[in-house]
Length: 418
Image (cartoon, rainbow, N blue to C red; front, side, top):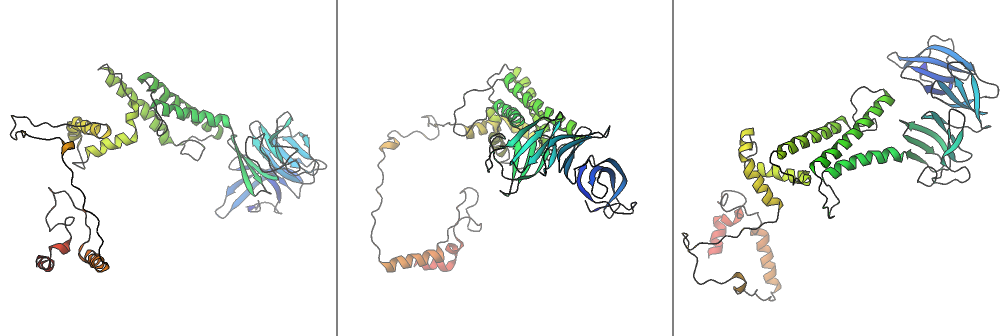
């Protein structure tokens, strides 16, 4: 408040409380004149410059000091020594709504009414435009630090309060050194229900759970549209309440514009998919196969042979790619039988693999400590382990990845051949 300079005034005003109407217009409680005033603010390159300071109404008898004030529907609500009063900006009429003798409280706008803290009763109260008062959070007979629903939670010393889009309330509790956050479950459940519709459309379920309910084409499109309509409704509500005409990117309490575009693109893609499949009368589509893991597996299959493909090459290889992708993601087996007419005839006398006798492992023997030390020294000097690559591509000793380089030196070869 002291950083606003009024260069046109002979004496710098001092404010007890302040409320912002927009980016330029402010209302404040001026100490020296004991009045509610209005003024405008502009930036002068150094700080904030105050202009057009005007008195709206003088303090009523017994106010002494204004602790807090807020704006709500062309009215200024003030908290003072007598309680909470409402000042009409249109008529200048002042009316005492709540009597709170010498109980400082903080006000904030909430919907069509206001919320105010009550430190003596360790609770937050809601005041309607008609003057009706009820407990919003906490209890007027019990204090504590308990989270939960607004009617079941407990506070100790609420000294500060503010709201965000009339849906989230922040309360500062001094004794518990914490900030309590209250949000509406109705809007939260509505949002989660819309997002859950997108999950249901693609049959997404918990890991390890059995999910047999596969959505049809009409059901999947209906669920995706439900999610899109919900997101568009929230976007419109935020624009109407905040006046934002630009792009919403998350900080305004909503998903980003890219997320909205992604949901619209999913709806458009499903419409094209089902339209193409309807030509073949195919109705066994399982959208769970469109999840990221399966798509990335198909993508890796495409680029396993060639990193960069043209659109023509991609179209030519699409059939083989899908065949190989299905092999990777399904349980399958291939059995090869040599025909008698083939180049390599099948042996006459063969036995099954289960009848082939196994080789018994060598028995464990005790080694002297000197032999163990000798083997350890040889392994540390010449037995460096290097990954063996495929036999058909890189097996020469000139390329790394085959045998250790030490094993190809003449000195080592001569030593081992003696």
